[in-house]
Length: 419
Ligand SMILES: [Ca+2]
Ligand SMILES: [Ca+2]
Image 1: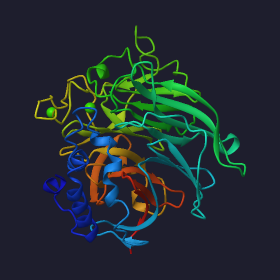
Image 2: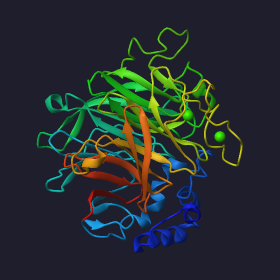
Image 3: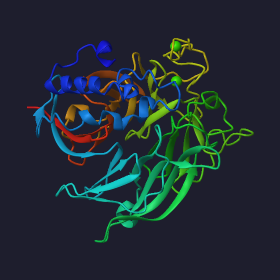
C-alpha cells in the first residue's frame, strides 16, 4: 500500500482520512487502493483498472476533507482552494474568454463559467467506451477557437474488433441555448484496435505556431507494437490541424511505416505539452518504476518495451536505458513510480520563479512534481505530496495552477502561493 513507500507524507487530517477511506474500501476496491500505492496492477490484466482507470473507487476521499478556500497545504508552498468537483474527471482546458471545459471519463463534458461557477453539460459528445482506463479523454481548444469555436477531443471508441483511441474535431457552440458540439468529425484513429481497455494515452497538444496537432498513442498494453512502426500503438503522431498526417513526418519515406508517426517506443504517454520554444515534452507512465519525462525528437525511438529504467511487474528485468543502445533516454525518470498522468508547462506570472517549468500530476504518487526546463535540459526540483491522486494539471489564465483529482468525486483545486 501506498504509505509504505512514501518518504515524507504530511500527517494532515486529510491524508489520514484518505488512508482510512482506502482501508475501509479494501473489500470492494482492492485494485484502486493498491494502485494508489505504486500501480502494481498497471502491467496486469486489463480488468484491473490499473494506473489509469480507477477513479470511481476513491470517491470516498474526494470531498469529505475539504480544507477550505485558500488554506495552506502542509508540506507544499500552495494555498489550496476547492473550487468544484466532478465525477471521474480526466482533462480540463481553459478557453479564450476564461471559461473552463472539463471532461469526465464516463462521457460527459462540462462547460464551467469561471466567474459565476455555474456549469452546463455540453451536448453532442460522442459515445465512449467507458471501461478500465477508457472513456472520454482530452479536450483542447483549437487556435481558431475565438473565431469559430473549434475544439479537439479524444476518447475510446468501439471498433469492429475491440476498441481504440479516436480524436475528433468539432465546434463548441455557446449561443445561449445549451452548449453543444456541432459538426463533430473523427479526424484520427489509433491503429490497430485492440481488445482490453488500458493505455490509450490519447493526450492532445498543438504547437505554438498552430501548425501541428500532436496525439500521444499508448501501447494498449500490447508492448511489442511500440517497436513496430507499421502501426500507431506506442507512438506520438503529428498531424495537421485537420488530422492529416504531416507529409514530412520523420518516417514518411520508410516502407510500411504508419502515416503520422513522429516518435515511437512509447508505453503510456499520458502527458504531452509544447514548451514556448517549440520543444515537445511528454510524460510517460512506466511499468514498475521507470516513469519518464521525455524530450520528444522527430523519429526518436524511446525504447519501450526493449528498454526501461523500471522493471516488469513481478520483477522481470528490462534493460535500463543506456548510452549507445539506440534508444532515446528519458530526460528524467522515476523509481519508484509517481505514475504521471498529466504534464503542464507553466507560463503564468503568479509563480514567477517557475516560468517555463514542467509540472507532472502523480496518480499513484498522489503528488505534484516540478521539473525545471532549460532548453533541452530537465532537472527534477521538487515533489509535493497532495494527498490525492492527481489526474490533470493546467495553468489558468489567472496564473494559478489548477488541478483535478482522480476520483469519483474528484475535486477541482486552485493552487496559489501560500502566505
Ligand atoms: Ca523510454
Ligand atoms: Ca530496468
